[in-house]
Length: 275
Image: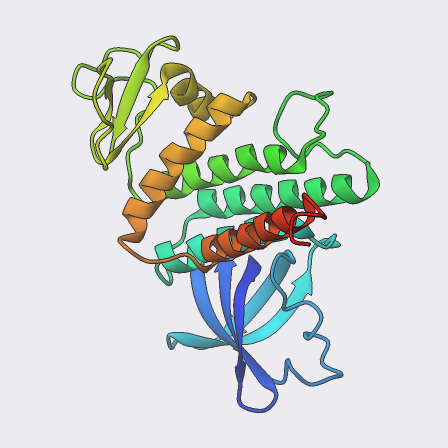
């Protein structure tokens, strides 16, 4: 038995599914769920992404056979940006982890991230606030898209750490001098943070950011817009390096949606423009 989430499903034969699951004690696994696509199958409703499960299986091959799958808690539907963000987390796990490589700490980070996104989705729909953000109690979250950022950054940071990337956020590379919140730094891939020159272009393998952002990311507390934007740029640089040229479908989807929104806004901004 193991705690698990379904990351992705594929139809298999006439009535079955092939699952990619993320488990607490066994890492990412491939499973066959026999008969799961039948209309009356009890597994049909629970073998879906973002539903926390307890599963059991049998077999020793690369593709085992699912025996049981039971939900461990009710799953509030994810909507809008929280849904896209959750699919982004799944895609990172599918592309950056290897099968049968357990990461219990990363499972906990994923579980916390999905719980946080679910809380944000519920807040956006009902106005009922959960303690989902990891921020100090009583802080009002009015912008869902802004509140998503700390959840994603904390997960990305833990993912990179679990994959073996030693991110040093509190000391300069080489000198080991402590990071100063008021100073500007370049964070260089596979090297770390170095004092930024006052002038000159930022190299392609680095981002310019403040010491405050590095320290805030280390603590997991991202509160102001500038820090959030810089932390996103840093994590995107490091995630892209880890992907080694692989394209993320979720990012492409977000870009396409943004283009549609921009096009719609331009068409409706001046009703007399095209007459």
